[in-house]
Structures are given as C-alpha cells and as structure tokens.
Image (cartoon, rainbow, N blue to C red; front, side, top):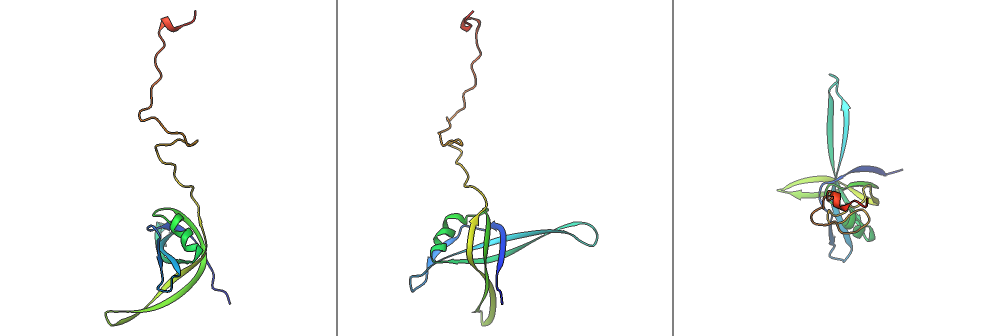
Length: 137
C-alpha cells in the first residue's frame, strides 16, 4: 500500500521550528494549494485548500530556512492523522509529514543590492548633459 502525496503551493506563514520534550526538532507550516476550474455555467472558479505540514529532524531546519510566508514550495510526503480533544469534543485532523522539500523561487535580492551583489546608490544619478565645451572637436 502507498501513502504518498505531492503538493505545490504557497506557504501561509513562516515555518516555526520547535523541539519535543525529548529534544527532537520539528517545524510546522501551512501550505495553500489552489485549483481553477469551470463550473456548470462556464464560469471560472478558484478553490484553495490549506494543508498543515510538519517536517522532522534535519528537514525541520531546512523548512525553517525556506518555508517563508508566500514562498512557492514543492513537497512530497505522506498524510497522517491525529486526534485531540477540544471543549469536550474529540476531533481528528490530517497532517502532511514532509519527506522532501524544495523552494521553487530564488531568494529575493534585497533592493539595496543589484544582481551582481554590488550596492545600489541611494539615488540613481541621471546622465549629465554634455555641453559644447566638453566636445573634443
């Protein structure tokens, strides 16, 4: 039997890196996937699903680095279920156990640096007009 899924979506927030009481590290983040389809009337509809994701061990540290709000993420994993009680009611929640994680976007270059990594001047200087005295002929 197989329990495997692949998701591509945008992070809903920055991954939170935590540790269990036994010292095992994990990171949790939400991932939004969106599907577009035409309904029976021919109108385009957009449906967004939110997935609760957890990465463990070394992958948790990686998730805390790349899973930032709005970043497009590719992940592979499996679905697990957990039960909890709230206000006297028992609930069951699905969770994606992340096994592979990749950011599909390059890290943005801060506005203070150009693509080669050199600082950008505070104010761009406009080309100065050339006067007739500056001409070599």
